[in-house]
Image 1 (cartoon, rainbow, N blue to C red):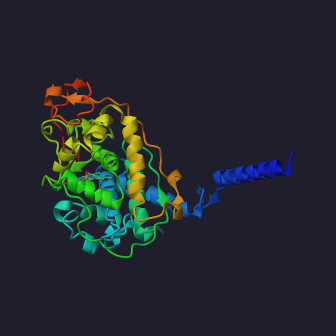
Image 2 (cartoon, rainbow, N blue to C red):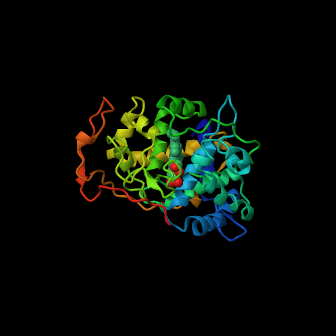
Image 3 (cartoon, rainbow, N blue to C red):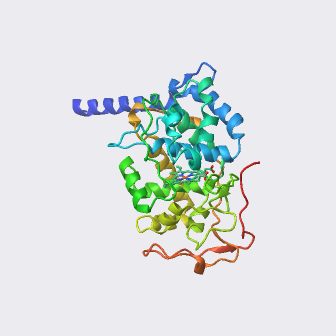
Length: 343
Ligand code: HEM
């Protein structure tokens, strides 16, 4: 065996052993939990606290609120206009950011800021990590969500984000596509992230504050949202955002939108990847620590896309010239949608 071959074998063995050590390395946290990295330790107690005292281990209003908060915090990032992205500035600089139209008043985000902020007092985590962790953890209470990655180590925010970086429901597809592109997200990312509206509901924009869901299966992360946003009109009791109506029909977004109807696995995977991108805006992933081990694996959902009631393809608006709208069975039991807030 030549010296060169011996050297190559020795190097390969060394790098395999390094990878093995990284995979098997464990630290015992002060509270007795075992983690792959000490940076993950604080999140065990935070996980229990959030699950028991904020989410009540349910797919409810607080879960939806924390998911929405990840968007309003993270998308506030622009290479030219400023904003720290996923930095928790929406908590630290709430006095400023909650005055923005997209957040305060009809924006409806202040309740979520006020219930999450107190968790900073009892846990040694930064505001940016708290928002990202609460978003990733909360959705695991909803069947059908993916286990999304969680990275820890975002530094404290240094300033409030500038106004105008969070899209509003009256924005056109052009405005939304341009804003996301400025933040570093593609049109496919927009569609993928909007799978979140599958478990979303409107409180403030309807004025009722009772949670009018965006689809007929508001507690389940499924593809009904992508079907029902293509209907001529929303079902009685459901809410429909003008921005979702526009994106469901726009040439840049409608085909991926439609493809998710019959491919929930693709929808889940794409949502998970896009959430990771969103949660890293303003950060370099290599400077953060992967603590995904703290995020439980959610309950699965068996796909069952349907036309509500007696609706058929004739009730669907045209969009996506490349592929026909899929054939679906009807669910005669679903003709109206109930509010989903728990009070
Ligand atoms: C395209 C841009 C988007 C616009 C214009 C938009 C707008 C809205 C509006 C107006 C509401 C209803 C608020 C209310 O009446 O209380 C809402 C709810 C929600 N949004 Fe979005 N959204 C967008 C993207 C996103 C993204 C990217 C996410 C998550 C990654 C998200 C997550 C949610 C959730 C979970 C809710 C439900 C909140 C609740 O039930 O209280 N949205 N969104």
